[in-house]
Amino acid sequence: MAKPLSKDSLDTNMLAFSRSMQITEGLFFGGRSDSADDRLAPIEVLEKGVRGQTSYDNAKDKAGLSNPQSVEYAIVPTGCDCVTLKFGLRVMPNAMKPHACNDTAVGDAYQRLAEGYRAAGGFSALAELYVWNIANARFAWRNRFQSDTMIVAIDFEGREVSFDPSKIGLDAPESRSDLVQAMTSGTADDLAALIDGVARGLSESVFSANVSWVAKMDQGQEIFPSQEYVREEKADKNLSRVYAKIPTMSQGRHIQQASMHSQKIGAALRHIDIWHGDAIYGAIAVNPYGGVQETSAVLRNPKSKQSFFDIRKNADEMFEEILGADHSGSISGRTHFFMANLVRGGVLGGSSKPASE
Image 1 (spheres, helix red, strand yellow):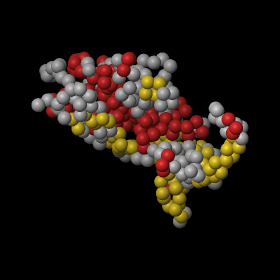
Image 2: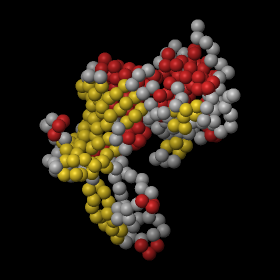
Image 3: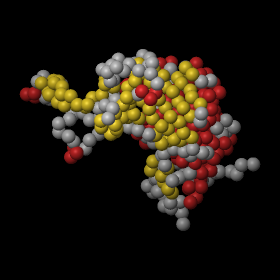
Image 4: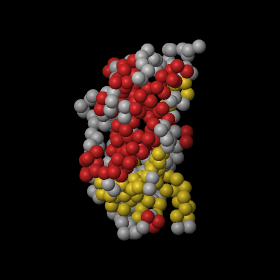
């Protein structure tokens, strides 16, 4: 019989979890739909001058006047009719115990909580949500809407599955059968193996996969890499827009290849908070307070009593729920959200409880 887990605290003033999903920088390539993978050409970030018009409020004497500027841009290379975005994914069981904790009893409590969550199938439920966000190509962000014909291909453990993202929604998760219907290659067993692999990576041993998004586009069509945030003191005064890029060689010359930040890809994959309770929003990125960058909304603010830290105060309820759960459907959204934050990782310490002696 399982040992009771009541009266355990999950709060201490020094607590950190390493993120469980390590993602490479995404790289953009141009290619032809009738050529092999090794014919892909890195997409180069270039500069150009543009002349816009001032459009901000309170422009005063500059209102409506020309606003010349230099920007970086990236386009589908000449002779190409498709774009590929590639990245690697490594899933590790870092949510199973804290990376740093100054209270042994609290650290043990987190480990028991994770073990109970695994036994109840909780990590399998999270894994299916992460796979949904790979299959729907959310990680391509704005580029996803630049094409009507695309696939997402996932290579893992000697298998390959691919999906048509246009058949998969972004606001609410698809059922497993709906994901199977959206597959363009592979079988239902392959999909199950992918989900099981991610779940195993989250809770037992490392799981790796390579992901490619391939979309039909016209040559010269603009693509959108990550945009760099440049601090004022380091800003290039000659460039008003700076894209993410990685040095590489192409056709015997050094170029700057367009890239998507690993953090931006990761933010897309963790759009699995479907438990926040706000009818206006669909899935949002998991974070302790339910912040939505696009609108500055905070769906799990302290007043809501639904933040990660508020849920943590009711540790006994989570332990009792997980002990009584015989499948993932018996686990509440509050607990799934809590565990998804441990998968996300970060510094999660409290501010008042001292360490045990």
